[in-house]
Image 1 (cartoon, rainbow, N blue to C red):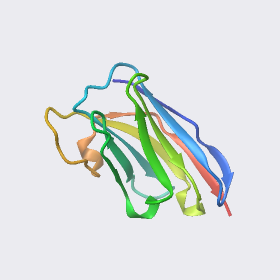
Image 2: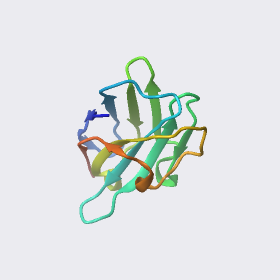
Image 3: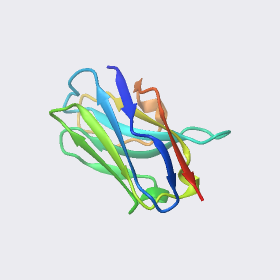
Image 4: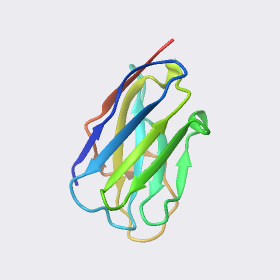
Length: 126
């Protein structure tokens, strides 16, 4: 599966951005998709995940209430809507796919995801 992320950019604090990640082939219903981010000099960290069939979601605490992950099954695309952005949200954002065979809890560890997009830069100015 190849993933193409887009939608990053520069925004002022308090603003909004939307990211998209399109998969090159249909996502199986048992799979999960997620967004991670990596700030300069820091490790890649979990942002949000969604199960493809049921649409179950999970978020890291720092983005709860501000970010929303969603998916379009027909377009094989996952989205990340980011509102009330803060300078600390500045990072390269990556989308990823986790292959599952059965219904499993959403995972926040990047080692559970096998396919990764190229990343898109989000910069939030203060």
